[in-house]
Length: 321
Image 1 (cartoon, helix red, strand yellow):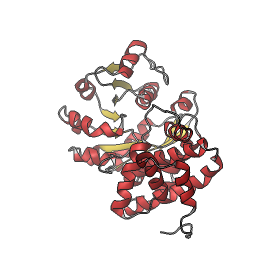
Image 2 (cartoon, one colour):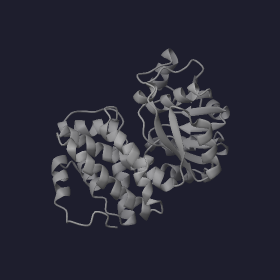
Image 3 (cartoon, one colour):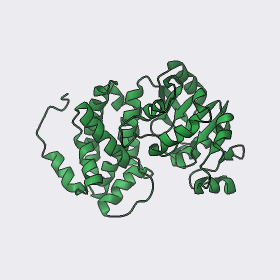
Image 4 (cartoon, one colour):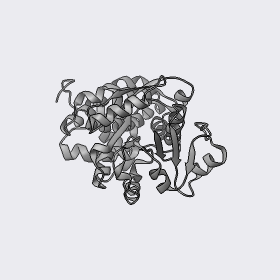
C-alpha cells in the first residue's frame, strides 16, 4: 500500500515515521518553501523523528496524490478547507482520506470531516485517526491505544487491520461525531489543565477531567453522537495523556498563560474553544469550562478569576442532563 502524508509538522512527520517502520511505501508532502519540509529534505530528521531513507519527500501535491492508495492529512485544522480545495482539482476525492488532526473549523464549528464534505468529498471515503499518544513516547518504544473512526465501517475495519501494530493498538470507531468532537475538545481542556499547573493547582486536574468529560458528553449527545464516546479513547483517554504530559502543546500553552509567559507553538485548543462555544450556543448545551476558557483566550479575562467563578455556580446533581 502506498500512503501519502500531507503535512510535515510534528504529527505528520511521526505518521510518516510510523508507517515507514511498518513497511508501507510513504510519500510525505509539505508546502513549497516550508521550513519544516526543507529541514526534512536536508537531514531526513527534525526535533521529533529521524525518518527512514525510504520516505519520499516532496512539495508537489499532485505527485503525492497521484501515487497514493490512501491519503493522510496532518496540518493545522484551520487550513483544511483551503487544502481540500486544492486537492479536489487534483482528483483526491477519488481516494480514501484519513484526517489525522484534532480540531474544529473555528468560524463555523464544523467537524473536520464535515469540512471535507462541504468541499465535495464523499463521506464514505473519509476516516479520522484520533486518540492518546505523544511522539516522544512512541519513538521511545512506549505503546499506546488509538481509534480510527468513519462513516464507512468497511473502510474503518480495513484501515485498522492494516495499520495496527505492537506500538499502536487501534480500535474500530463507530461514532464519528463523538470521536471528532471528543478529540477536538480535549485540547481545550488541556489548556485549562495547563492553567492549573501554572497556578500551582494541579490537584484540580482530577475534577477537571470528570467535569470536562461530562460537559463534552452533553454536547456530543445533543449533536446526535453517543455520549459515552466522551469517556473513551478519543476524549478522556487522550485527555488524561494531555493533562499530565510534559509534551502537550495545549497544556504547555495554558501553563505559560497562567505564568504570563510566551508560548509560540501551535495549540489547537485556542481555535477549538471558539468553535465549541459556537456549537454550545447552536445546540443549547451548557459548557461552563469551555466558556470560561473562551473568555480567557478571547476576552482577556483573568484565568484564576474564571476558575473561581466555576466554583460559584449553582449546585446541581452530578449527572444532570
